[in-house]
Image (cartoon, rainbow, N blue to C red; front, side, top):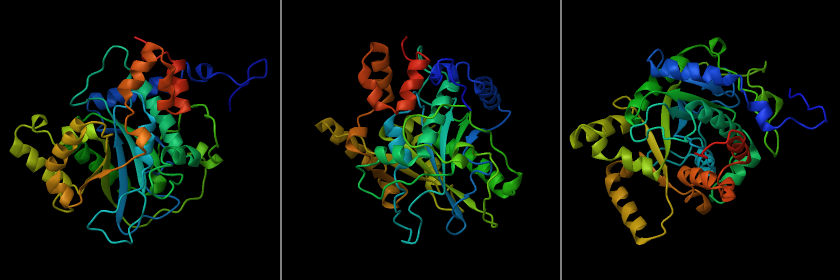
Length: 357
């Protein structure tokens, strides 16, 4: 419960977040991952037994987990739109498959294959705090609907099975291997024996509030979990730049090594990881953009034909959003950057004076 100020007003975001009790915990978890003490650290989950589905059972024996893996520096409305986009129908599936993922994961890697921390960047612990804010928007109907209102698919529903985690693995193939091992371990345990950290005391942003159960995911709630052992199946949600890196030979020992890794990553169970990749298309504003997309389609052709890699549309106004432009706007004092993020993230960036260096 938030304590009100002496004048009766609600405390400011800075008063409620600075210092945030969870910051030291985040730093400790990041260090555990960096030193190899643990492969994955779950730093938040919407209920203790995540990724076990709690309000609806998984269809069949497969648990479909979407993984939004990004630098979140900071999270943008494009991240929210991609996290909430309906699960596409893959070509080799029948129409009985669920239209949504059974669980969602926001993943931050403390070691990136192509990006290093730069002066003025948000620290990893601060990014985790902003990822909490993004996760809470995924739990809300109004924020999700606003992010995906023009996708042209069914309206997104509140998702009660969301988590935030950190990993120390720079490549998607490596992340897939580590995450599958981690999820198999959690899914093999009885749901009642699992635990997940409670969220920090982040303030509620404007709009409809979550239910009491969602606001306090570790509260005592009667839940029904599947009794059978579920097999995790990962779908990585990425932007175009990330997909281009995934299919770029320079990130592998050789072109042949790339082909071997990608085939294992994207091949069906039990021969491969059974992963999928869903990529948000960028805005095609010039002939160069069209040429780049044509090159990308050629690079992914083998797996696109098999339905393992799909390009999807997010709202037109979201396709041009980038964290780089948000950081630049915050640094230059251009207030237009605030329209590129959710109100809660904008307030957080201001409260912590981020990106002004």
